[in-house]
Length: 310
Length: 289
Image (cartoon, rainbow over all chains, first blue to last red; front, side):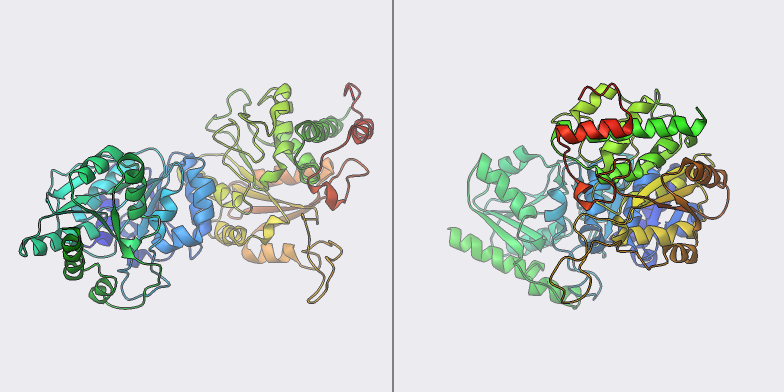
């Protein structure tokens, strides 16, 4: 169990030793995002761009045109809300080989509050042609995805939570774009989730197991592309489908699943997530309870869904 | 003919190709391409190290037209220089064309990035210059920005960062034509639109750029006797520790009497009658209009 920001910093250091084209651009948050680990090891390839996120996206595009593999590092919200236009025109529209290391994604941002919460980023980024959108659940998947993104030729948006989740994967884990992963089979309800929320879904499923409810968990690390057939097939085996995300229920994972199922296999999809409101500054546990995303609160809600479905 | 007369003739041809192409397509910009034309001719025909037959030649100098709505001006110059057939200009803005309304790097070899949403090109140029420095590649990056787009905050981010990295291999060219699409009101509570005066007038932009760390050269952007030495000086200082800003005073719509200084020609389609006058004034004999 390791914080995803440490995974980010450590993996970049490792990549820096094998790939001389890897450069890291920081918008003055390196000691938060842990890009400072790379700065320490490879000062010549660590490019401080100051508190100016639009420019640093453009600079990465210029570097990529010369064959560098630039990793951009700042908080998620400053990518998808402040620097969206350069990401759209310069990165996505040109299929530039730029990697977006979106740190502090979601609600759990270390007491920063709603100004720094980004719970719209999946909706925004998955609407963008040419962009690959991925959200790892734990430290192992995080490292594998960061390595994969570095090798892949084209823009990748990596949604990285700040903190640690208990590991659900082992060293055999391999990332395949689009592929979904069943973390647990279950017969009463299927929870579909992404990022570290998948781990909390698994924990909720374990709590429910003790109460006689069999909940399956399907993890979707690759929001875009996504293997639609796998979503359909999993949903068709389930009595009821619930999407769960540390993100708005509008246009994110819940939207994705509802879009797929409404066309291919219409059925009820219940979306759990943030319901059109802002967050606040508070400890992780408080926020997860507030938005009913903690294993305990989520378990209660899912139990109600199962009871209502019977 | 002296050397610069040849460039002047090319610039007249470029203006003709731009305005007649826009007329053929039924939409496009004229004023901006005309104000930028002489500088782009100088870059493509005299200053930049490029290979039209090998547009991705790694050692080439780079040019980014950040004010992407002047694309037809760049396409015209690239066509004259041999990057694309002049005939292809007829496809401008048409479905499936390599010549999109705004420059699209995924379609036309010879472009360095896509521009159109304003204020973004200088950042890409900064990235190229920085990467070239890190690798010791001897190439120069030129970015043309407009005075209108200079209102975009992202440009100022780049203006701040480039001198920090001491990028002598980066040159920005400000096409200061003093007119933008709709313009500003003169003052608070004024009900009319104002006189469309230069929004930067009275502001010491040169002083601002210099204080930020740019080496500034100030020229008449329509006089090759000033354009060529400035661009060559910028390029010659590629190993220096300061990026160069060439402040080019230009006239929007320069080259034809009825388009010069007229905001209406920001984006306008010339009539057949107007094209005849244009051809005459630009000395285009084989125009067939």
